[in-house]
Image 1 (cartoon, rainbow, N blue to C red):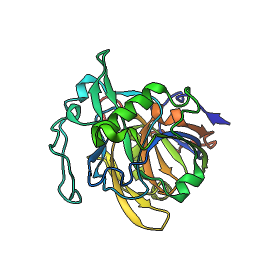
Image 2 (tube, rainbow, N blue to C red):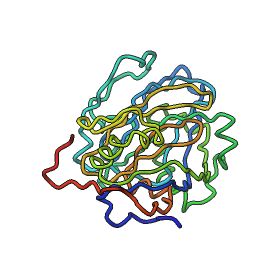
Image 3 (cartoon, helix red, strand yellow):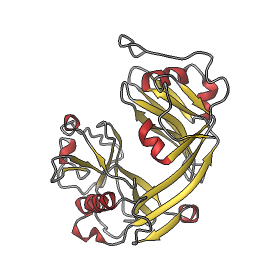
Image 4 (cartoon, rainbow, N blue to C red):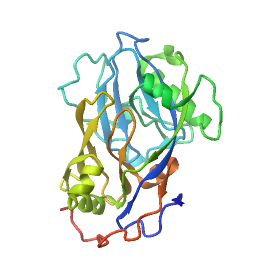
Length: 289
């Protein structure tokens, strides 16, 4: 049995024994088509949190991937400042550095006054990717799964990053179904992190190296298909209902998503009989530990 709606009592921490992911994605394989251009990609969450800030070096199999439904950003977040680190950002060809999120390629005003958001991140369209996904190149096979507005806005984002010539290569429409037997932990962000930090074995299963309660985030233990190790930092949003889980695929690592976003792609498996030895709840006066 699966859980397909936001679970009742979502403020409590719940541990699920896995989930089935129905991954529908849009992919733009930029590879070395626009060399020597090396733009910056920011993976921006609807909450304004920036998960990724890297330079896209032109190379074979390099691509950007995104969700297949339109996303928006509330007005209160569009003027958040964009922070930069010099290390690892050599070779960037951007002519200016946006100071706020609204100045980036990933957020702009729609005609109806809402703020379009394209949440995109780097991937590799290597052999394993192409074997694990069903791929339709350049043709939308299902407008219900790949919403035309999302496709159009993803294409607009690519033009903003690479220039008007970014109509080619064509967008790939990708789908795969994966059963993930690693645990998934849901609840309010503060409570989820507290519970994970108190359970070292759960941290290991989630591929999390450390938890930062003060900064409300964690460091993920990343391993690619070649066994290469790296780390990734995730920052969560206070008070937000979320899921922390272990992402499987070419890259295995601990991840987090807002609960409603997670449930767009995934069916949580029925939790074990005893979900927790205790429910971790936080009232309005609870601080971040």
